Amino acid sequence: MGTNERRALRLRYLSTEDDQYKGLVARKQDLNRDWREVRRRGSVTHVMQEIPGGVAEAHILRRGMYDQPLERVVAGTPAVLPPMAEGMPRNRLGLAKWLIDEANPLTTRVTVNRFWQQVFGIGIVATSEDFGAQGDTPSHPELLDYLATDFRESGWDVKRFFRTLVTSATYRQAVTVTPESLERDPENRLLSHGPRFRMDAEMIRDYALASSGLLVRTIGGASVKPYQPVGVWSTVAMPQSNTRLYAQASGDDLYRRSLYTFWKRSAPPPSMGIFNAPTREHSVVRRERTNTPLQALVTMNDTQFVEASRYLAQRAMREAGNDFDPRLDYVTTRLLARPLTERERAIAKRTFDGFVELYADDVNAARDLISIGDSPFDAALSATESAAWTMLASQLMNLDEVLNK
Image 1 (cartoon, rainbow, N blue to C red):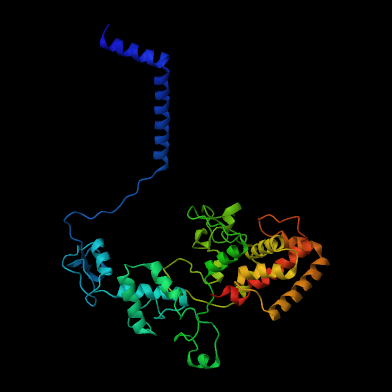
Image 2: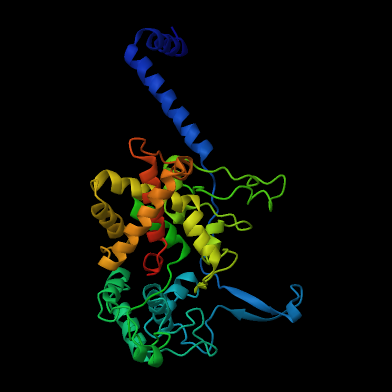
């Protein structure tokens, strides 16, 4: 019997009689199938790489004409700024090292100024997007120098920097404005009182969801499509566009943080734009802050905010007992982080009683209100009382104290 015949006979025996061999073959086939599936789902990403020993260069062009090159120029930094050290490579790594070099203080100054803007509403240099000759001068130049130096020497520790700001006596001041401080420091540039400014669009929505208990805190994942008025996309989309129609999400995806909201640049989320969220057509360092009636219409009538009010009201009714005061404290603790004063409590009670009377006469309107949103309504609770608490929670959610930082 020849070698090939022996090999064929052996393979025949293993394939028909040896159970262990047959199991291994099946396992190999499964692994190959899985590997082909992984490769099918994958994609090739092209990554740029520096040419070893190459020199980055370009040519000045005559009147911008690409076919009329003039003198050759190599990579470098603007002459008005500190030069790159001799040992630094003239590539992206060298640029990164130059940006954080101690001889270049601009990077740390710009960075800490933007962090300051997030916490205090306005930077030490008000024009945080422009540190040049046409930008504003610092309100506290020595403070800016100190913060920039401290931030760099701490190893660019962002968490430590923010802890320094929010635990400072300056930030922890009361926001109360006296006639004297208003006259001397009308824009609070001298930090005569604590900062007070309206939160950004994403923070307002996330705060409503978080305070009500609806916020889904899952980190990462694909973009989601929360509530949005019907037809916003279709009015601007091409017929063949794959984003012509808006398919609203369901379940937990309705309550993800605003960071994960799907963004169509030609039709951004309306509730975000109304609160001055940038369109993302270009980079924005400092957002505008306007005050318009449309903003109040969003926080009072948008599905996401009405649902958050209803969900918070139901939690108060289930978890805070049957009396008015404990339920009110439950709501205000989550929205305002404090109980109401006696005067405020009397106003809230009078308002609540008015809503109870209103919805007792119109139960259908109460049911319509508490049915807004996809989260289920607790049928064990009184519809009339639930609607009244929903409206009271909505009013509290619209207070300046809630919408302002």
